[in-house]
Image 1 (tube, rainbow, N blue to C red):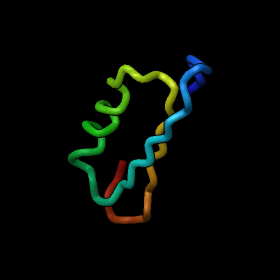
Image 2: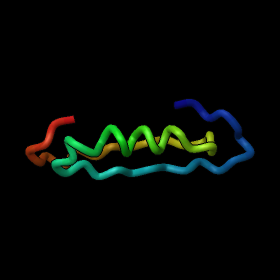
Image 3: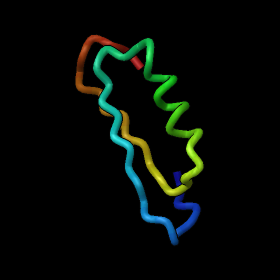
Length: 52
């Protein structure tokens, strides 16, 4: 994602993914529905048995 407003500090969302097959989409949708525009999202696959 590109920086949309350089006057806002960059916020990073780090989302641990641990067997979250049933909830990961809802989590990501919630992050992207925020009003704040200058952010990035990191989904960390820790090697668990879940799949994105």
